[in-house]
Image (cartoon, rainbow, N blue to C red):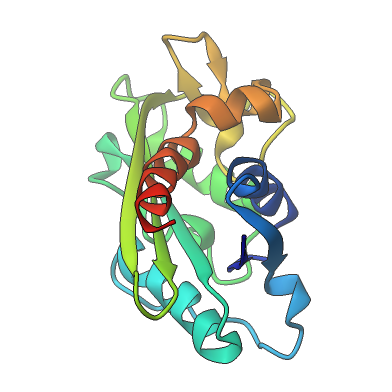
Length: 194
């Protein structure tokens, strides 16, 4: 089988993705395995551009197939914000809690709380490059619930399940999340290649 690099140093994300791609890739590396690579600047205007910036930078550096992803939370009340700026909504060095607080503050007490989580994955191996996406519909709660996950997981509520993403186990989340849906589409493409 093949090697792949996940273009991230986020342990939660690496664990989530690794669980799903392991049957297809025996050696799974991450950005942590390449300390010589400085931070990859995500200055694209779309999730697709940012995911490609990451995967192509790693592929160019290593010659190893690379998977890059970018995720954005798009809130209807905020006209699709924070979108591509989700990870740095409260500023470049903002923590997850800073971003979450800013989002809740901007939404106030509005009843319009519908949102989507969207993940775009890019795969670059020099000959079979492709993009896929996954979209999860939900609502933004007025206060956090749950301790699992990261980012906006504790306020992203799924009415059909009755839980936030942060109230789910990693196994539950890998079955239904936006990243899981994108990974499902990713694996369909990988099966065609291999």
